[in-house]
Length: 233
Image 1 (cartoon, helix red, strand yellow):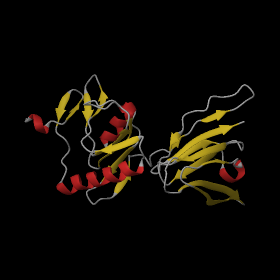
Image 2 (cartoon, helix red, strand yellow):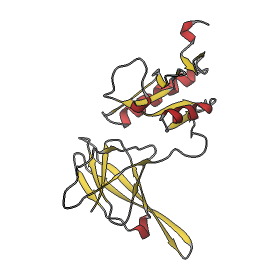
Image 3 (cartoon, one colour):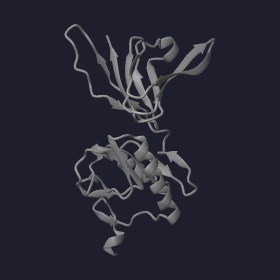
Image 4 (spheres, helix red, strand yellow):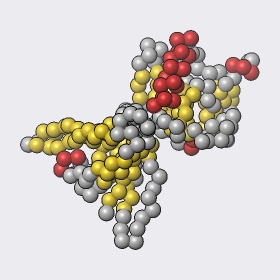
């Protein structure tokens, strides 16, 4: 087998990269450009990135598109800890399990008809934003969570939860959407509250009643320029 065709190794054995058409390669480049623009300066999206899933037995895979930390070391093989999510081919669903086992839980598949779908077993999970509890002794302010416009976020809510939302961009207002779900006479009523955050502005949002928003606050953003921290007193 020609070395140029052995782009992946699975369980220590060379494995040819899954076949990709010219259309598929163009689609991957297009997706990479969109994701690179959407996720802000903290993240990069590229094609042809090799991800090291396991040292022993050696497993390295090269998904169609990889979204990874912009400040990670320039290494030949990217560790899973630096990967936010990957976009992969739809005809190899077993790869989703391999990525998840290695710690890359967000896996999106692309079909040749340009549609996308989530990993087998349902939609990809929302990212969890941990809540920092403040008291009289004080609390260390945590690093902000980068907004995920693809999957959204969930925040534990006891009715006292506050969100500190920053638009780190310099030109465009961004939107934060908080999903509502309330049961009335046995019927679940859904809706959403949207908040616009101007460029360069930080807003404190909340609190949110558990009767209206539930014990898990569902937060959606329209761009990765939104940064979020969660607090309660």
